[in-house]
Length: 172
Image 1 (tube, helix red, strand yellow):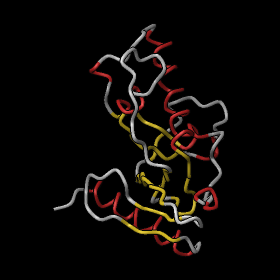
Image 2 (image 1 turned 180 degrees about the vertical axis):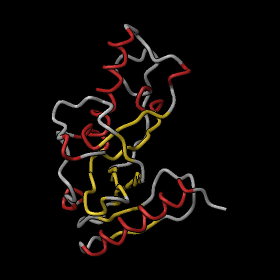
Image 3 (image 1 turned 90 degrees about the vertical axis):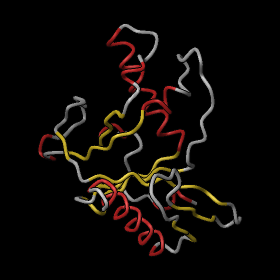
Image 4 (image 1 turned 45 degrees about the horizontal axis):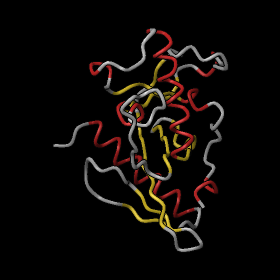
């Protein structure tokens, strides 16, 4: 039996796949559960790019206290990402190592089908490293304790400088 989370994930992956096909992108879907690459897109130079689709059906208040939040928006999308992979590549981590991120990440909310946020791996790292910087500053720490290496929330407004919905051309 599939969990609600697994169903949301599959629904998002198939929806994004269908949108990419409508945009005439040369795209392939990978099947299975617990995989890092959901879609593969082939560009005009026949180079493959990996895409990780993050889907949610969860809404939240402005708990991150974003100053550019528009209260008339109501609740906003919330995704959970494992902070450990971003701490692994963070400049303040004394044991910093590399991590093989997907080329692109697409954040999809099943309640707002046509407001998909598309970011590169570098853009996502910028957002998550900023969250780590805030955590280290707020806790007056130099590292993230193992008990805090869990899933952290990210919302629509966390992507404020990259939040251009449905920018499918970014994928070429």
